[in-house]
Length: 429
Ligand SMILES: O=C(O)C1=C[C@@H](OP(=O)(O)O)[C@@H](O)[C@H](O)C1
Ligand SMILES: C=C(OP(=O)(O)O)C(=O)O
Image 1 (cartoon, rainbow, N blue to C red):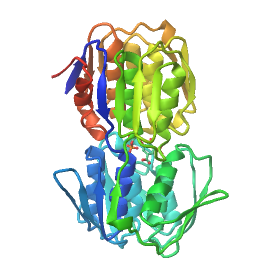
Image 2 (cartoon, rainbow, N blue to C red):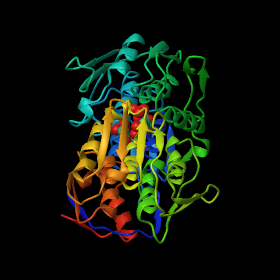
Image 3 (cartoon, helix red, strand yellow):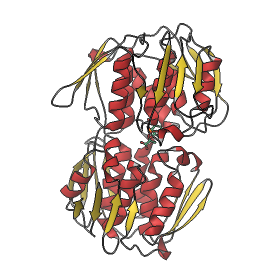
């Protein structure tokens, strides 16, 4: 699907979609448990992939009309899947489920789409092998398809922290139901660290304890997953919130209100402070879970995305609209996502007339030297690139047409409806 956006101002209220990160973890944690009701779950392409994996391990996920998930788990002991696990476009599914597969008494095969089959899995495969399982990339290049044979029983293991925090999350979630637990030593500094905080917060809600150690994290084995009262409610998603928030900051003359913005462990809530620092008029009522934003003239800032990789595309577009330079640093791990998002944003914003300077670990957007002109751009099959380019379309001169716009289904299925609700002039074709 192509979406064509004409210059528009935005005004009104948007409800944040539920968090993708919490939903993945809640579905898998419910898989590790006996029976759980997960309310306010995100039902998107990525989270459906995790639900299918839970079913292949012997669980059952059913969805009521109001979106509530009733999940019968495999209760700590995953069955050997009767089919290949297709994780589609979802890195979180592949990493978390690879560790689950290592608990099964037999062999699991995992694959995904072309993007996912180009992302790094090697460190997690090595960790599983060190823990006594067998875990291989069929092409021997550390990428999916993956073949994983268990069961592992737990032990100590070391892993780099600067490729993906999802390896740590995967080992902690699986480690809790091993015999001996898993003690993880980080070989390099942990990037995307708040995502491990999300894991720890969610595990605690399921009655599972994780310890921070001097050099990493540890989880005891033989723990039971059991959500308090058998229920878990997913909070709103701050990576998704970044788009309506940025829309309000760049084109929200009448003001935008975002609901469902309750505090949680999400590092991406930093977007509120970033937009504020750039000069927008923003107010986050944490008790009420609302954020109000009104546009103002924006100025470039310097931002580290070490903890918040998923914000890079949004910040790049904000930088294109701002006066002066926006320097996004500590960004190397943002190259290992659905696309290399550092290059993708530099190249696609370039088509809209934006000047950037790209380095391995940073992206500088030269807002003052950029005159945003509508053009045909490519969403690169990456939901966050699509949504960030749509933001640029609000203020670019003339029409901006984004190819592959359907990929928003990965994390924010109602994204274009939400933009229309804010008064954006757009056409699907
Ligand atoms: O654990 C998670 O839910 C995620 C962790 C991050 O990935 P990395 O840890 O690979 O940087 C983030 O980019 C991704 O969108 C979701
Ligand atoms: C990188 C992302 O997710 P995943 O790693 O699950 O594919 C994302 O949602 O931006």
